[in-house]
Structure formats: structure tokens, C-alpha cells
Amino acid sequence: MSLLAVGVLASGRGSNLQAIIDACERGDLQAEVKIVISDQQDAYALERAKKHGINAYFVDIKNYPDKNAYEARVVELLQQHDVQLVCLAGYMRLAGATLLKAFSMQIINIHPSLLPVFPGLHAPHQAVEYGVKIAGCTVHFVDAGMDTGPVILQTAVPVLDDDAGDTLAERILEQEHLIYPQAITLYAEGKLKVQGRRVKISYLKSTLGNS
Image (cartoon, rainbow, N blue to C red; front, side):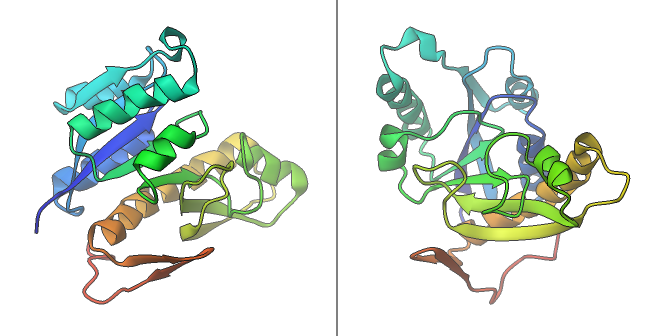
């Protein structure tokens, strides 16, 4: 089975990137991270990539006249590395028309809530402030909206009585590191079929649970 070529866009520390790299290196994930791109020069995600011999690029949006031109450069780099799936890992920009057109239903993201509730920034803090009893995380396909694309996988995380946003976020992050590689595995194996808002999953011969 050939390895799925993955490109990762990240803006920060890249802990989900690390989880993906680790799963690839263990052989749990039939994929290879070919390139990591960040819009932030000091993003630790770039250092993680370099430590594993992965091509790492900082693309400064300030060097481009508009978002379309910036994304054209990002797309160019992804295509130069023959990327088949783009994974957003703490990427703090909405995907625009240029990126979405080049990789239609080939971009996935992970978000620290049970979407569609608490989209956008600081979702665990939103959950604690709202008083919900169950939070979690979601892997979804990316569309033009903010965390609005079709849902692939979700995992629930209980909200404890003494939780603050930060403590809840850390427990959710542990689950993110598990389900993001799982979602990539399903994509790599061709087991995801998008029908409108719904993503149907075929688990036959899936490697889920073997990691």
C-alpha cells in the first residue's frame, strides 16, 4: 500500500502535527508528512518538522498583495510535494477560495469541541463558561465557513466540576492526538464518503484500533 502524502498547515506549537508524525513513524498510519507550512515564523511546528527531516516553510502573508496570492504560494508548495491530503493543525486562518479550489474535500481540521457547538477560538473555555457537562473534539472536512465542514470523527470528554478552560483543553488535546491520526487512516484507506452534510464511514478492514 503506497503512503498517503500529507501536507500540514500550522500556526503554533504543532502538538497535533507531532501526533501525526509519531503515528506515521510507528507505522500505525499509512501516510507520510511531506511538508509543513506555517504563517508564523516562530511557530514551533516548523522546528518539529525539521527534527524529523520534513520540509518546513514559513510563508509570510505580508509579502503578498492579498489572501489569494498568499494561498497561491501555499498551494504551489503543497503541489510541489505531491500532497494528497492537507491537515490543519492549529492553523489560525480560514481556508480561502484558492486553497479550497485546489484541494476540494482534501483538507481536514481538528477542533476542540463537539461541533457544531463552540466553533472558533477558545472552545474549551466557552464550554466551561456555558456550563456543559460534555465537551470533546471533532475532525471535519474544511469548507469556506469557520469549523462548519462535514464531521468525520468525534470524541466526547466529560467536563469536571473543578475544570477551568485550560485543564479541560489539556484533556481534550489528549483525545485530539488519538482521533486525528485515525481520521487520516480512514481517508488513506478510502473509507470516507461525503454525502451532503454526512460523512459515511466503511470500517471493513480498517486498521482503527490497532495503534
